[in-house]
Image 1 (cartoon, rainbow, N blue to C red):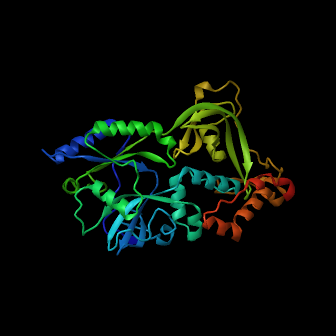
Image 2 (cartoon, rainbow, N blue to C red; image 1 turned 180 degrees about the vertical axis):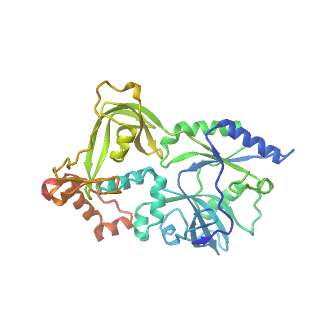
Length: 397
């Protein structure tokens, strides 16, 4: 555990345009008779990470933690290609802050493998990123292809007067700064940009959950000061989640490597955030009971973390008369062995072991993907093709 030289504060945030207008008024009142500009940035849905450079070399990477102290994850940060180990300009001593994130394609691959292995799925790219940074093996972290955007910097020996100048300096040093960053002179500009990204964010290769605006001049930021938790010079304006209405046609049970029996909603295909969604997570039998999900129901689906589709709720007034309650089976749908739910667990597991064809195939795939050769390939950035394993059931049995 490492204490931050300066607290890593969180941002005030809101889904309301009126709250952003109130924020603008507070800034104006805090800077009477002064002109001020904002810097517009995308709010990356990732994990905050502080980087410390001494004489231009990366010496320490620390997670946000509780804002006062965090966990040192330097070895894992060094595997992230967009974090330079040495800055391009010599003799720089500084602290850089930004977001570690996982692109949507990498996240989908990771969850597909976890699903095949019968492991719990990550709810969103942020959770998978946080979990990756905690791994003990940097080679496994490297295989997950994390990335980093820098959005803040502190350096004592500098003549920068604006936040936008510091962003440009970080770009010159070799750090990745989000290209959507823009200086704005009014809330009208910010609202226009917000609306543009609210409709086009599905086209980005990574997840954003809103935008951030910051007062540009550093001396004005200092005079505005901070509350106990947040700077008064910045605010996050968040997006609403993607949702759509469709019909749940069937509840399919799939069996993973460890025997976990997981329910999946088979949906009438619907367009959601630029993708056609035909399947959604139902998590486990408790979730089915809690949401009272039945086959044939009209349901609201949402992309959790704007990536994984999940069933949010049932539209009860559209339920067909006589729709039957779903009863979770006590036997494996693949091999007929007992499916047992241990005390304190949310998951029911097939007890068939290798006589279960689903477990046999998934164990073979897991073995192949986690062999020393596969780990070496993954750590070298080589994609491992599992397509031939998907049809291996006859060979395994």
